[in-house]
Image (cartoon, rainbow, N blue to C red):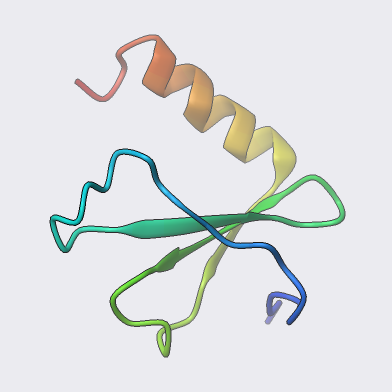
Length: 66
């Protein structure tokens, strides 16, 4: 099982707005992304390859999840 490096730079979503529904994202050295729950960092982070992350972002921009 893959785990995130300790030196990752985590960013909180700009859309979180303090509504207790925050997520954090960190870019991996291979271009993939890690995603974790801001409220409970003891839970494992989820890893997405660069291709998976790009497809997700494209889907968001295209309104696929609206």
